Amino acid sequence: MRKIIIVTYQGYFGQGLNLENSLNIDKLKEGLKYQGFSVDEIEIHNLLGEYQLEKEAIYWITSHQNKSIKHYLNDIVFGLFHDFNGEMITSLINYLSHENKGLQSLLYNKGKNVSLVRQQYLDNTPKNLSYPKVIKTIDGAGSRGVGLVNCNDDIKNFLEKKHTFSITIQDFVQNIKFLIKRFTGIKYNKEYELYNKTRGGFVLQEFIKCLDHDIKALVFYDRCYFLKRTIRSNDFRASGSGKFEFITPPRELIEKVLNIRKSLNSPFASLDMVLDGNEYKCIEYQTTHFGPYTQINAEFYFSIYENSIAKIKKTNDLESDYVYAINEYLRNK
Image (cartoon, rainbow, N blue to C red):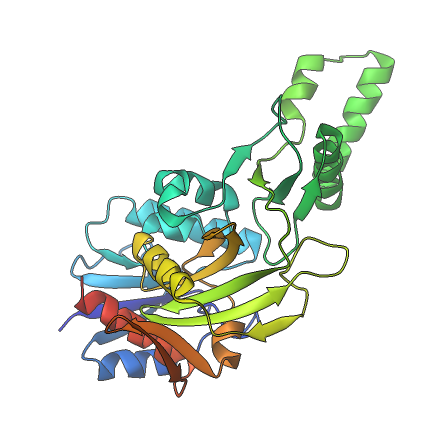
């Protein structure tokens, strides 16, 4: 009997419909046990100290979108699992790339293996760029931290605005000290000021012209849910527009998201998809702690069975789909 250990943070396992809502852990445990797994639940801080990782167990670890908590979780998970020979759901690299668009752009052959729209992970503006480009901060869900830039100055203004809103009291005090030293000349060190200047990575993504929507795809092994999100008026962003429509997808889109899920080597995935010419491409992916709106509100899911599109009435809740995906994924490895 294989053992799955569900690792929570203060009883939370992300996520339910709302960001702050946990998945129903009791339902997950009950469903996994029904499929023949032995299931334990443990708080992440209890992995520290005397705890010994169970090499034969499969660890399923919550993530988080609170930055400080996510940083804490990442440190523990990387520190304990970087040389772990057992299994994780999802993999360590996918876990660390949650809410990290920069890392996402570097993985899977720089995104080629998951049909990622071409992206660059930068910390300054390169020369000889062609515009327009989509600029994205490293973290932030939905349309937050996303902008359209048409020149180098647009990049500068976008980043300065983001840095201004994220400045801490410590940063503010430090900047005041630098200003005083710069204008008085007392103990001013230009190199030291430049060294301490607030920067931060960002992603530049190819802008795909003439888009009027994107598609959110949630994939639970071979069960695929699709939500068309129409772009807002006088904008280029679809996420957060509120203009949603559940669609019957073409075969090539179903096949694409199934292949991306396999390439990510995860039981489940959340994918933001666009049609670029005649090819579906991925803008962003997550394999942990993703919003389940599309699954919860869909009436049908889709798959490919016996070389044909299958449209199936949904009778399963969110936790059941997670259990199904894990069971099928492990059974078919």
